[in-house]
Amino acid sequence: MNDILKIILTFFIILLMLRKKINIGYVLLSASVVLFVVYLMPLSNILKSLKGTFTNPVTFQLLVSLSFIRMLEMILREHEILKRMMDFIKATLRNKRAVAISMPLLIGIMPSLGGAYFSAPMVAEITKGLNLSPELKAYINYWYRHPWEFFLPLYPGIVLASMISGIPMRSFILMNLSCVIVMLISGIFLGIRQIKGKFERSTSINKNEVLSFVPIIGLILLVIGFNVPLHYALVSVVILLLFFYRKDFTYFKKVFLHGFSIDIILLITGIMLFKETLEVSGAVKNLSIFFGSNHVPVIFILFILPFISGFLTGITAGSVASSFPLLLSIHGVDAFGLSFAFVSGYTGVLLSPVHICLIMTKDYFKADMYGIYKKTIPGVILIFITALAQYLIFRHKIIF
Image (cartoon, rainbow, N blue to C red; front, side, top):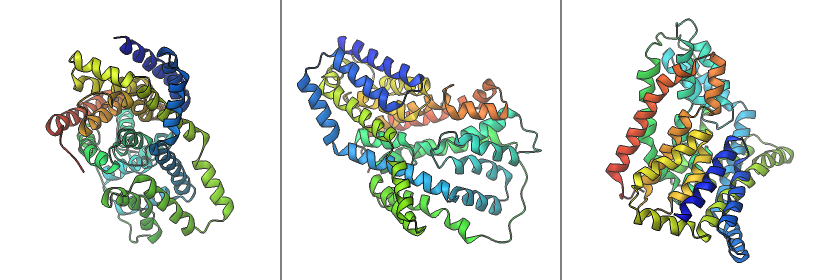
């Protein structure tokens, strides 16, 4: 029980600091220090934690993956690749319903802060004259921005989940696809049935607009189709884009400095130090013994820890980073269990009143929060039921 109190204290400090919008890296570094203190760790064990942090291959893989995601986002943004993708969809799709959801879907490909505010005017323009409530417009913009975070390896949450757990990215993506499908389909029934009508079809297709899809499709194919590790796939795509655009050394330097930012280095160091400290302190071993001896249902732990973290912080990466090291200590947790935990955390994020996308979307459309929740909560429940059913059916199965 003593270990439980120590972990609850540490977890509370993590959530409190995240609510204060403190950088996740600083939060987890501080949490590691808290563990040093509450476990009265000797200097030798502290040094052992530090050594494990910087010699673990996962540290390097995380650094490369998250840094090159930032580089890719910068290149796509500065060369208006996303804009050309949107122009292509608007020119080729005739169904207004499809175009309306395609705007937040496209903007959502890039994990940029405040992206929901970028797609909101597009949703407003497409739905003009359709007599939709502000809450429904807000729901469309918010809901259809977020399916990507379940599986797209540009988002830090799923990258962290894969790296921390050791589950291949391809396996995590495949396990989460059912929730993506449910999210897309539920949105049709809960939000966009009222959108009707068609646009005129474009008489010509711009070749540059078609080619704009190549970087994202190429990345997904490398990771899912050919099972290439994410960090190798990202490096390949970024380098090819830099050479394709024939950039000079100055631009190369600008891109790399943007990618390898101090925030990314702090984040990775904090995650790995927290993970190593949990193990070296004995917390992982003692928690596993406690849960086993007290017969606490594993499924409850897999749900409650990530969900609370996600709901209180509104950040998927924060939910994963703070809960996954603890979940890995529990006997009997397998790949499908961790997929269920990831979904549990993300449902908390989707419902979080401090989720920046929800706040910005509500403000743009001047919508009532209760009205948005009336449509969001049923969809979240369906996603949760899907993840729960998948876990109960497939747990202890091996997925490749």
